[in-house]
Image (spheres, rainbow, N blue to C red):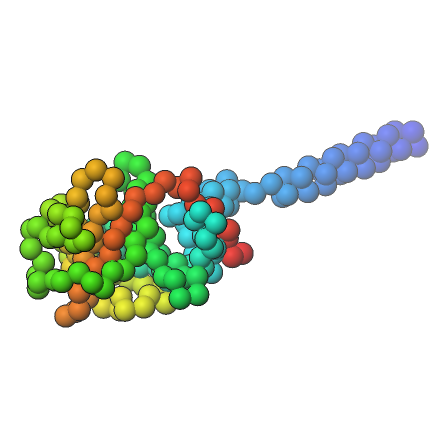
Length: 191
């Protein structure tokens, strides 16, 4: 009889040990939802305030985020800062991820509102798109502080940068915009 009790105790200990081992190894693995969150965080669409973005050996800190919403169509802009150098990274999911880096220009003479065609530095641009979007913001966003932005997008063709004009209240800002690939970026999450 004692042999049966001894066998039952040993089986119980072995089963308990296996259960403990199994529960610890399963907890060490991230849950599917957490894994998806981590995967999204290392993409441009998952950037957060404080993340570092490296673009061709230039390190920027994400200081602000704008979320544009035009009748349900959304896209993001991130204010990237390295000292006095400020660039904007725009990210839009349209069949595939579209990314562009924008730098403000202050020497474009603008009419209000901008026309269908513009010339900047001897390059002719034609208007490709215009619209109006509601904007929410996170962190620091510089001059972009209104709740609504009217935008005008221009293209020149070839490998020339595009031109983007944004109207914030009564103020107009112009940006040269260059399309980039996500592989050109290294993203280092803040946490």
